[in-house]
Image 1: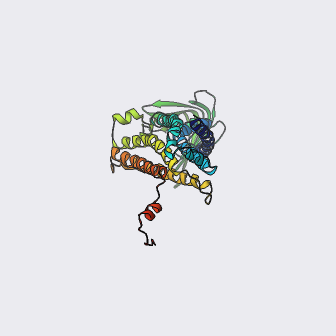
Image 2 (image 1 turned 135 degrees about the vertical axis):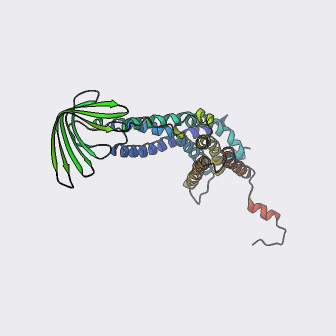
Image 3 (image 1 turned 90 degrees about the vertical axis):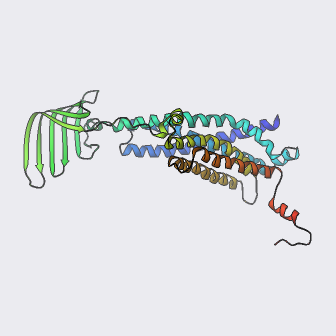
Length: 368
C-alpha cells in the first residue's frame, strides 16, 4: 500500500541518519573518557579501541531508543509542515491509522533493543570490566616500560628496569627507590624475578646493593646482597565480582534481591519505553509555523531525558526497597502508555479544551 510504504521509507531514512549522528556523538564521548582512563593507568593503552567498542555496544540500546523516537517525531513533523498529513487526513486517514505502519517499521528495532538490554548489556559490561581488572592486576614490574622510570601502583616505589623475557616475570638491571615513612631506600640489582607465594607476589633480586637512609636521624646503611626479596603485592585481588550490571538477566530473575530487581527493572524499562516512545512521538509530532520545525525535536529530547531519568530513578528506588518491582513498572510505563493513548485519542478526534468550554457555555454568557 502506498500509504504504508511511503511512511516506512521516510522513517528508514530519518532513522538511519539519526543513528549515525547519535552513534558518532556517543563514540566521541566514550573515546575521550577512555583516553582519560588510559592516562591515569586504569585502561591498557593498547586496548583503548576494544574497551571503547564494548562500552558503545552497551549503550547501543539507548542510542537506538532515542534515534527511533527522534526519527518518528521528525518524519511526522515534516509531513505536517509539507501538508502531506492534510492530504492523508482528507483521504480518510486519521492520526490513529499511522500507528500500524509506524509499529511495522519499529518492531524489529524494539526487538533489537530488548536483546541488547537483556543479553548484550551485561556481557559488554563484563568484558570491559575484565579488561580493566586484568590491567589493574599487573604487578609493579609489568607496569614499567623498558628504559623508563615509572611510579608503582601504590605510589611508594619508583622503578627502572630492562625487560628481556616474553613473560614479563624476569628483568635485568633493576632499580627501585622506595619510601616507607621516614625510611628511604634505593635498591639496585643485576636481575629480578617475580614469584607467587601464598597469594603474594615476591620480587627476588640477585647480585645487588641497597642503600637505606633514615630521614629523621640521617643514618645511612649500605648493604650488598646476593639474594634479596621484596613483596610486591600483599593481596592479589581476583577479578571483580559480578555487579548487577554485569549479571545475566536469567541470574537476576533467579536471585530476586533488591539490587537485582532494580537492574532488571532498568533493562525491561528500556524495552517498554521504546514502545511508549513510539506512541509519544505520534502524539507529540505536529507543525506550527510560528515555532519552527526544531521545536518538536527539542520537546522530544526533553521528554526522552525526563522518561529516561525516571527509569534510572526507579532502578535506585527498587534497589533501596523504596518501591516494589511490579508497582514501579506499572506506575511508570503503564502511566506513560495511558497518557500517550489519551493524547493520541484526543488528537485523532480533534478534541480541544477550548472547543469544549465554548460549546458548553450558554448563549449570552461571556467567558473571561
